[in-house]
Structure formats: C-alpha cells, structure tokens
Image (cartoon, rainbow, N blue to C red; front, side, top):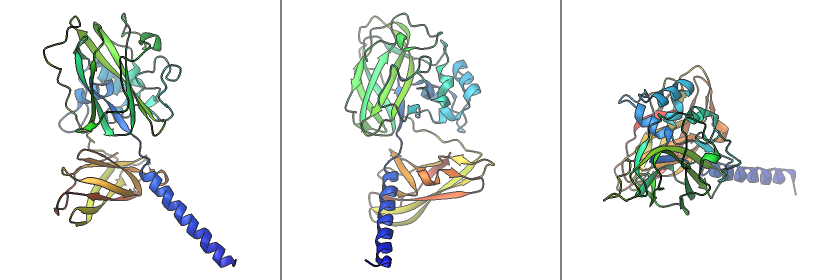
Length: 341
C-alpha cells in the first residue's frame, strides 16, 4: 500500500475517533440534584437567602455562617453535593463529620454541628411525598436514612448517629415530573430534631449525590388527614455574575426544529474553570444535540457545560457552543434569563 494511502486511512480513522469522542462528551454530562422536600441544607439556605435581585443574603444564622465560611457559590450550586467516585458507597467511604458535604470541600461549611439549620416540620409516621430536584436526570436509585433516637445536632454527624438501614429506597428511579423525581413513603416514627440523609446513586456511572435534610418530627406517629404538600420545585437561579457575560442566539429555525449558539465571555481577571451557560426556553422546546459543550435540560431550563478540551477560559476569552432543538409548530423559540458561571 502506498504511503499516501496509509496516511489517508490513518487520517480518516482519526477523524472518526475524534467524532466519537466529541459525541461521548456531549452525553457525559454530570448529573445534578438534591432533596427539595424535605429541603437539603444547601437548598434550604439557598431559598432562605435568595433575594429578588438574585443575590444570596441568608437570614438564618447557620446559613449566614456557612456563607461567611464558604461563599455563596455552594448555594447557587445547591444541587451539586456529589462524589464522582462514590459508586453508591456510604459507610467507610464518606468520613465521619463530613456526611453533609459528602467529603466535597466546596460544601464543608454545611457539615457544621449546630441546632439552628433551617428544618422542615414533619408528621412522624405519616405518608410523605418526597421531592428530589432532578436538575439533570439520570438512571439510578435513591436511599433515605435517618438519625437514631438521641441524635445530638451540636456534635459532628457520624455514621454511628445514623440508622443502619434506609427507611426508604426508590430503585429504579421514579419518573421525573415537573423537573423533579417524586416518590412517596412513610416517615420514620421519631420525635424532635433529626437529619434525613439522602443518597442518589447512578447506574450509568459512579457519580453519587449526598445530602442532609434537617427535620423536626412532631406528633405521635398518627398520619395527618391529608398528605403534606411538597415544597414547590424551584429552578436554580444564576445571579448576575461579575466575571462573565453570556448570550444565546438563534441561528436558524424551521417547522419543528431550530439551531442556536451559546457564547460566554470571561470578563474577570482570572481564568474560569468548567464554565456553563444557562437560559430559559418556552414550554415544548427540547435540546436534541450539542457540540463544543455538553447540553443539559430540566423542564424549560437549558444549560451548556464546557467540554473537557475547552473547560478553561482565560480572562478576555470567549467560547461558543452550538445546539439543535425540537419544538412544537413553526414559531422560533426565544431564550431569556441567560446566565453564566
């Protein structure tokens, strides 16, 4: 075989391999999620401190101290308490004293041992509709644990404080409805302040999410007349950032589909790592494909995360990702509430 022919074949194989790698990156997006009912610490502090302008200024003392220690970004990312190497592991993997952060240093402030974290009041022994925000859904399952009788919230939370077995398991995962996994179960017959510990494990990767929901059990275990109403699903809000700007632009549209691009610019004086762009779309619009980034969608909210090869954005630099989508009818979609981080 001639050298030129060999080069052509090798080049063709390289192009195919690159295409497969790009396709894999488009579908390898990280999951995101946390309990919203009963609210996880990060979600409870996020809603406690979120102002109409998009800033976070918690009034709860525990939340305010956590922000003072770790900043506001963990609350804007309330759905990101994860371990990419978790593989569903709990005892012997997540260290004592770090259960609420999952051992993820970004959320270390939420491991603080104190009795004034925002707490959901629940009827002991009652049926309850759990709501787990599915910012990015993935197959897998959920396990919910609870602290033992005599739990002391002013001491670091350890595995010895937790009941050995989960009081509720949802596996396989329930269907996503209005941007959240929703499943019903019976609450533990406890009294006073406790922690419900959630574990969301994926079956398509080792990524595992952990979270503490502070609760106060009341009553004697007799179910109330009606099922408690779950906390409404709230889509994560991106505050007006000082280090980036973003825009989403429609490139082309046709009956039932469209093409658009999302661009981010680093307007700060330091590199941005693992950038993302988020926006809101009309009901009925679905992202079907993306390039130069990984696409995610929860209801009417779309997001593009940086791909592995363009994850770092230098000061003054820009990055653009493209995506295709489907829609009902021929009316071109609009993109509002564009944010970045």
